Length: 308
Image 1: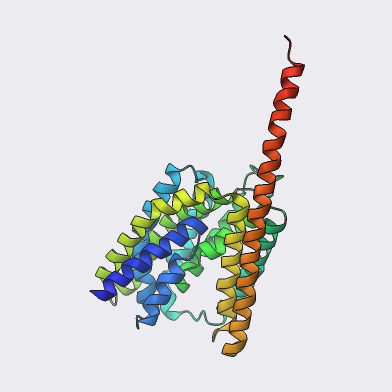
Image 2: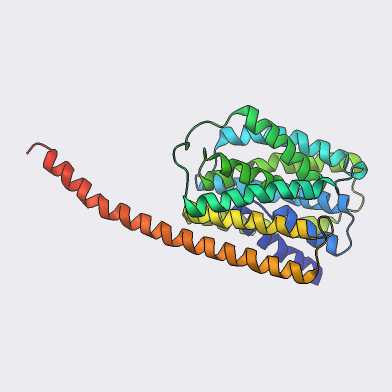
């Protein structure tokens, strides 16, 4: 019973983070399942089965708050489903140990770009509204779906920074669209796992409690991403990407650094992340105050220029 309660809490917290920042549900829950002795394929299958429900609730919540670009959902979600089915089907025969640090290195660079971009310059507005092409979204979805199924998580860490870095879609719609399209990925991955493994190793009670915890958190997360300013949200997402992938690169799948060195690096990353969010918050307030100060002057000019 204690284990089920813990899984429900983890499902709630993981979905709260995932729905707010566009990533981390799969990574968080899969890590816990592996820690308690679940084999990788069964852990990934359990998480993806739970995600069928959590992503459905999350997508509906994001749609309710206007956070979804349905064109992006279709263009990235369908290739993502193909990649996820392939990854789930062949997971037992694939060795992703070598690819994992390479992928983490790429994601770390993307995370640094997002963190610096949003912290220093805020939301790029010169590209906002420009369409995201299929030739970009298709391969991105295929790769992200494959990584997600084989690694027990990865749809958000791959898709979210790539869309943010494009500068063509605002952060809340990036997160909402990634979370909504993940329903297709979770469904395809689950079908692939059931096709390859059957129900072997899957604890259905774990699936249910993870789903319930995530379903409760989904509308709360969708509201958070609606009200948090884009500049601050970008810094939060960028820092999370850097922290997550730095951890992978320093671990046994990467450089296997000494624990002392790891804690020094963690301290530096946390300090930089907190400083970036604080700076973004300060700059957002300054920009908002400047906009409010300009408003009355613009209204006055309109009144002077209008005929009596």
